[in-house]
Amino acid sequence: MKIIITCDDKYEAQKLASLIFINDGKETFITSILNIIGNELVISLKDKSAHSIVLKDESNVEKFADFIQSVIDKEHKLLSTKLIEHEVEMEKE
Image (cartoon, rainbow, N blue to C red; front, side):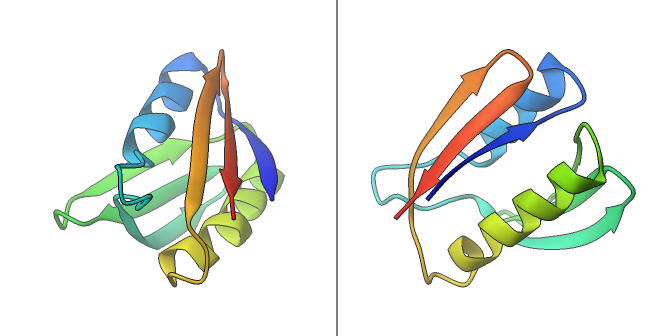
């Protein structure tokens, strides 16, 4: 399954792409979504830090949350991420 998430700007897209980082084991650094406030996501990483990512709108937040939840639950693995200006393309198995 492949999706494209539109972020508020190029900086937010770069931040999302780096926080989703896929290592050789096809794992993500994201461990949970802590909060959703409008078009902003607050996520927790494996190192216990929390980060905010501002997406274009609430529909992109819902799309991302639905997509990433199965990865967080280890039901799926991320295959790739690609940064395209202010968008992040992600694919999972």
